[in-house]
Image (cartoon, rainbow, N blue to C red; front, side, top):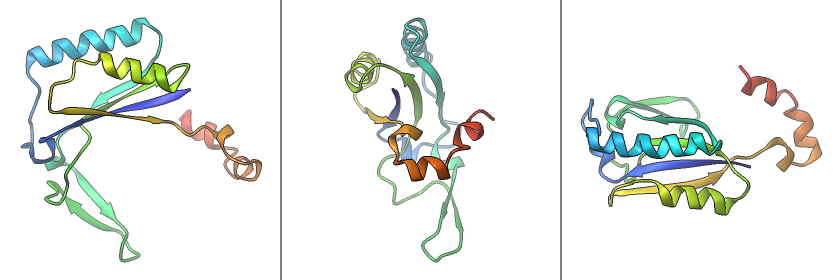
Length: 135
């Protein structure tokens, strides 16, 4: 089962462009990342730049509207993610609990939808989805 662990650092929504973690924070997080890799459960991971240098595309009017960051109405933003391949939701939770996150960080755990989770008619429509993922 694949699970995405989403890091949500409070305050990151208002971080300046170029904001970076401290060397000590990176060192602790790299030790955790190595544990994930050595356990054979890590598929992918990345940190994200602050929203100040991002953009959003909304479709409320029926046509795309681009808004450059920062986004003043935002209360929570993603700071990064891990993609894990584990045996269960509980195992994903257990890994999240081992993360050296600070007091202002939250990890949201979300299971990835697999093609097999959908009814046969949807699987047929999306039959080339695995080919797209491989690109």
